[in-house]
Image 1 (cartoon, rainbow, N blue to C red):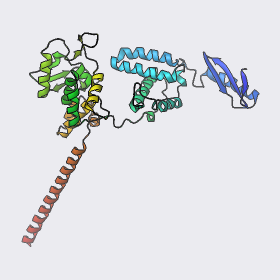
Image 2: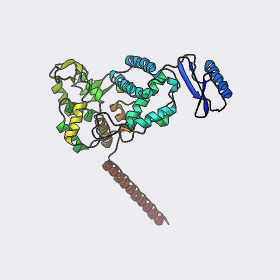
Image 3: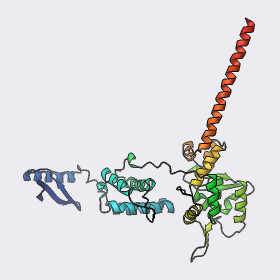
Image 4: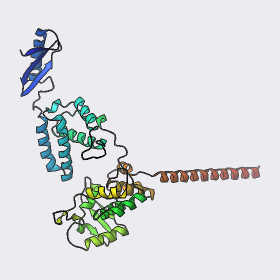
Length: 368
């Protein structure tokens, strides 16, 4: 029996299924410790301890490898790249662990430690955002689900992400577009006036533009409703005509030339992150502002202009009205205007009721 004394208690240590088991017997009696060790081994063989299964759980590194192979085959490149990044982060905490050794307690320790870490390449000392931690947790949960293992991640472990959706003001829009370089300026203008997702604009094909009907067809998306016809405004109509007239690429926004490389006409643009960050800095916009926020801005402005929620959901490519409501952020001024309208409506209703009451009273007096 491999029992030994440590800190006044007896411990046992042995190898099982390629794993090292080292635990306290929680007793000061050596004979009792040997009995507990024997029972522990028996439980492992019988599968009563939650470790031994018909198919033993893999180590974290092996689980990640299998998951990423699957992800590469079913996810878009951008989504797969996000999972790869998240797996690199998770490996710093869970490397060398077996999957069933990742418990709710260890996941909780991960999220509380990760949220305090400084952002990579951040010069202002800012820490990792709740959204970043949540994306890593979502990847970890997906790994467990893919391998059909019991997931230790509880719903309450995800941080709240309030305030992530932002609507820019007209003043910020003008400053941003003034400082935006091309093709960012045209891409941002299209998002602001159509509500398209950035990736939908990046992947826009010339053959899907109908200038006579003034529509853009988006042929891809996560849901059927994402595949939709999108109407053009006059500004977008003129903007796209100029771009399409060049006839250089099947893509409206092809991969541009850069330092040491030529433009790639057969490939659509993949990102404008650097150009966006530079434009935000030059425009002096202090608050966190993402390119995707232009879509939120479109949705909010459309709602304030009187577009009904069902039509807006169709324009945005949403499958449910509930999703659309998450994108609509009424401004304070719009809320004040709504209150005034309600006040006016209530006032008119009271006046009408008073007039009706007075008229009935007059008729009654005349009859009597």
